[in-house]
Image (cartoon, rainbow, N blue to C red):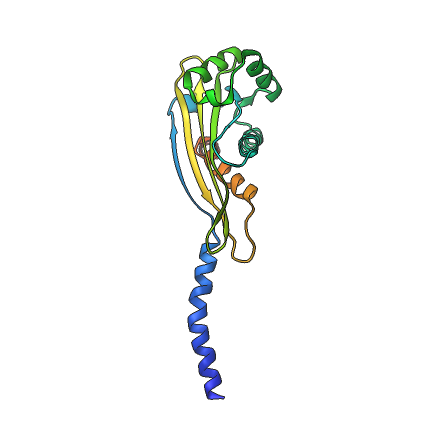
Amino acid sequence: MRRSSLFRARLLRWTLPLLLLGLVGCSSKGTNNAFRHPVHMEKRDMTVAVLPFANLTNNPSAGVILHELVTTELKSRNDFKLLEESVIRHEMKKRKIDIDRLADAGIAQTIGKYLGVDGVIVGSVSEFSYQHGLREEPAVGVSARLILSESGEVAWSANQSRMGSGFFRRQSLIHTAQDAVDLMIDTMGFADMQAQTQAAEE
């Protein structure tokens, strides 16, 4: 009986740290770098076009998925007036502009002028897959810039890499991508501005 109790105590001593380590590991990990222009990003009434995202991954749907997530998130926050995607696609087809060329700030600025918007958001997806290790973990890498149509200046830029995991249940790739987009859009700073305004009014 005593041996059994001693064995259980030793087993608990060894397994508890491993369990805690696993629970810590279930939280999402990632890195984020961002730039926000102190003047241009104070404007919340800008009309913006979210251009198609370049896909630098082996997943053929990554660019479309991240573009859709970014567009949907911006619509839900209502910080910009967003141009309809059909108008953007029509103009790009009309001008014969390839998605891969949008990384050029000059071309992005020109499209912004064609579309008659204040700025365009261009982006790319560098990672969209499950990483294989001790277990599969979803990994997402995305970057974006807001380029002003009139001056060509970068009003905002951010890149976000995110790795999700789950101890009891694996986080999905889409869920991880949504987390990455949320964190990236947060760096625009509009939520902080709104909080400061509400605090001042109180």
